[in-house]
Image 1: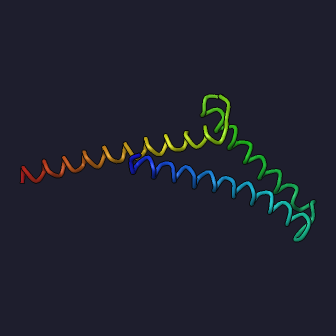
Image 2: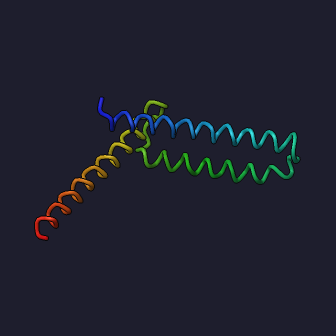
Length: 108
């Protein structure tokens, strides 16, 4: 396995864990806000907009992904492929810049 693929899989795993942490934080905020800090009358509009934002994010992911069946494996492979494509573009850009620098040095 190449270094790029390992890095892309690690990045995908971190993003998935960050998403899980965000969902748990959302639930934790609603729970603590309702029962410990404030009341439901204060937390309800906040919870509405948090859940609306989550729904919009997940629906955009659904429509970008091709409306297929989703699983953790699919999402992991989607994030890995996305990171690999960005890495490949960055490597090719860096090679192009190095070629350009070498060309400039030849003419100077």
